[in-house]
Length: 90
Image 1 (cartoon, rainbow, N blue to C red):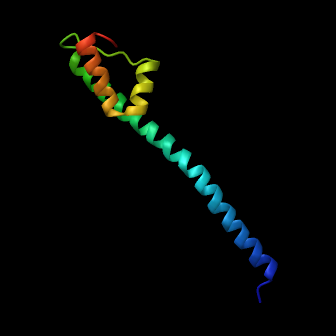
Image 2 (cartoon, one colour; image 1 turned 60 degrees about the horizontal axis):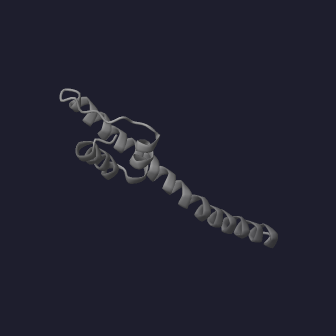
Image 3 (cartoon, helix red, strand yellow; image 1 turned 120 degrees about the horizontal axis):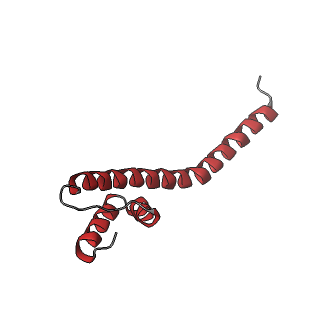
């Protein structure tokens, strides 16, 4: 027969795991999305720089550009390309 204290302890442990899982899962999703956006945006910038060297077109990958790409992802890379083309920034 199962002891009532073991059963209560198991239920409390499961509740704590669910609560802490919810608390830490949300920031982990944000961090994963940021890293994925950074990777995809950097890949787009790399491809653009590889193709653009033939035409004299280059976008530097510095801290500000990395933050823009990390937050916005591929649209951020496109934004940097448009800024470079129209405003000669980047």
